Length: 331
Image 1 (cartoon, rainbow, N blue to C red):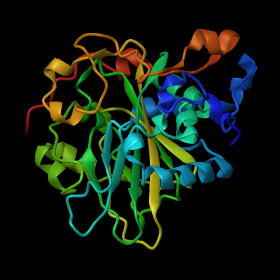
Image 2 (cartoon, rainbow, N blue to C red; image 1 turned 135 degrees about the horizontal axis):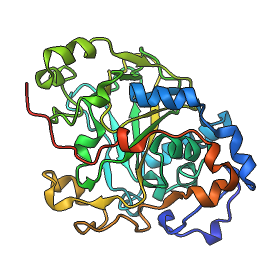
Image 3 (cartoon, rainbow, N blue to C red; image 1 turned 120 degrees about the horizontal axis):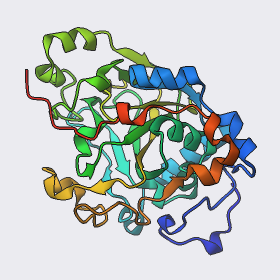
């Protein structure tokens, strides 16, 4: 990866575009064509709430990111202060380890430039159906033999400090993700269940059953494993029910998650119940659009795509991302 280190700010959020050459950028509108999701893939996302098997990273790019990840797991105090959230072990099980950090893109150039990956940006635009910004990234690492769980949850349950709900999650494997080492699982169609109560993120995998109706439990039991080769990605809706089991295998399971939001998303912080969780986030005054350097604009369709714009399949955003997201009462 070629970069001019002399031009870099300590906080890479100061750079509103790639700082290196790890992710070559399209020069012409036609250069985007190789990244366009098919109509069938867009329909599948609308119907199931997720799509998977999307090639996003080359082997070289994965190697660069994994090398940077080693550094991010041992940051100095100044680097650690750039993270919005940092837990070297967030597992509630004393015999397990789950590394979880938010904000790595501000610290190392590879993770910074990943958010400008053309393959990622095109897919995210199609699945949001609108220009979008980075909401935040997340790093999840499950070490071999004792990697902890990420319990069943809906992402937007933790994101109600923003409004309206027009978000998208991209999960990218930095190792081959299998059922043995703790890959993600999805419940197809669960994005239509509404916003459910939080039942915990790093503890009891079965706690979510307590907030599901009998009909939902039947669907839940048909969950699908999201096994992926390293460098491949899945995308899911903010209400998609998902989780991942422990890693008891001899291989690590590392992943980077990119969370996006449509341009114009507002702060709803005054109505958020978990204020303590946001103590390291930047200021977000109520009802003000999130447009600071911490939430960079990643895709503005008319400027990037020009004549291709009309031909690109996109989701029906109004149907897929309804404005109201009140929590569903317990069954």
